[in-house]
Length: 241
Image (cartoon, rainbow, N blue to C red; front, side, top):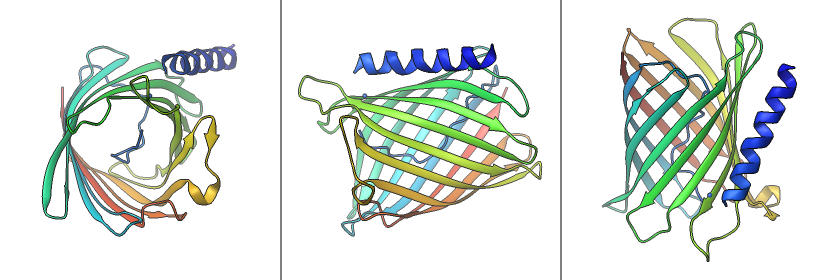
């Protein structure tokens, strides 16, 4: 019964997004489907990345998040970047996470993620959808975020497909080392061959420093010619109830 509900919910969500008609991931974070009611959070994310064309870019995101119900969380954040000595404010985003169900230890949890990106630089507005899947094992947690992304507008390209994945080691209360993988596969009707897709792989770690402070950091390396060469990222979050 649970398996049928899981596949039914997943099919409904993907069908809805494909009917909507949502393009390049900035922040590299894997999202859990679990929502903690009443939690409020301020997050600052920054990364340095060397693109395949040799240009260095520093990206920043500052967000305010609030879990306004037992299954729903909303976030508002701004995005800006630095490159070649210039700072540019790029966009503001609205993000909504809905926890569809949580089945506890050693089972799949499922949620949805919807983000609306409002660009400031003349670029089209964008919708991004992720299915949030998480399975807990005795000492590890596997989190998967298959994603769909599309520009809004009559001349917008086809739906783009990608994924985020994380395997974390749960052996300690305050630290969780992990391996993360991020892929951008191209348009759904013309998927890229492996060398022409973007694939990033590397280690990451989450630290809990006291009751309110969380710190995430990691390094990602490009696996294909179309990938960034390297990305170093970190995120600091202050949470309270």
